[in-house]
Image (cartoon, rainbow, N blue to C red; front, side, top):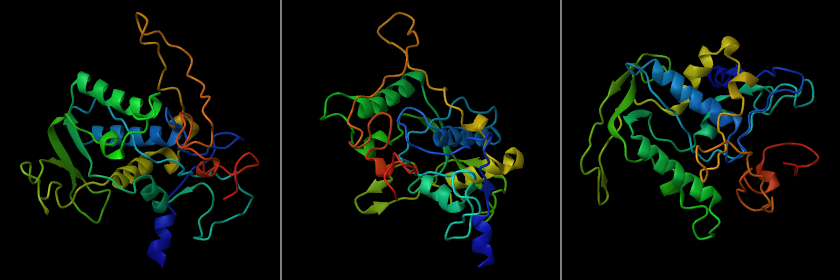
Length: 264
């Protein structure tokens, strides 16, 4: 049990002020957890890819995975697995990435990135109910890149071991009927490996408010010359509907404990 217990004692999410810092994924535009994930992929990739990378984005489906800071529960309260509020555990990291491919880098044109963003935004905000909320297999697909290289660990049992870039094991006729060829290297890097490396690199292994600060995504009016910045839209959608623009759907999906939210 010692090994399992140590896996839970991972890193503390300490508040930067008296209000505390809760890591929550509850907004379709921008939120703290996705900012940390994007920073993770960007920073770790820059230590691996010669010359660095230009961009890191995430369009995942991590609604409702909340990590409470130490002052958001009663003093001394612990969870059934023995951790305290503020701990970021392996369970939390795998909850963020329940289904995930191996980490890779590729070259994308600006036009392709814009096209992919339009597809995702249309799925979330399209007023046509037949186009709103398109299937996940298309929305979460990343295509159009070239020169893919995969991250490979020197030691599959040590997430902190050195990482090298390798080509795909197979690139042609990957799926032929029931037969599927291997693409990833044997010691491929999983996003949880990346998260652990990044969290280890933070001062005190602690996520702060500065690390998750919102405001990276700006709302603009693309119908006007120069795309001037405008205030973010305020949703008038019934908050009990699934995935309104500002959240994940019904209140009990929010992961927030409070009088204004359903208990869970």
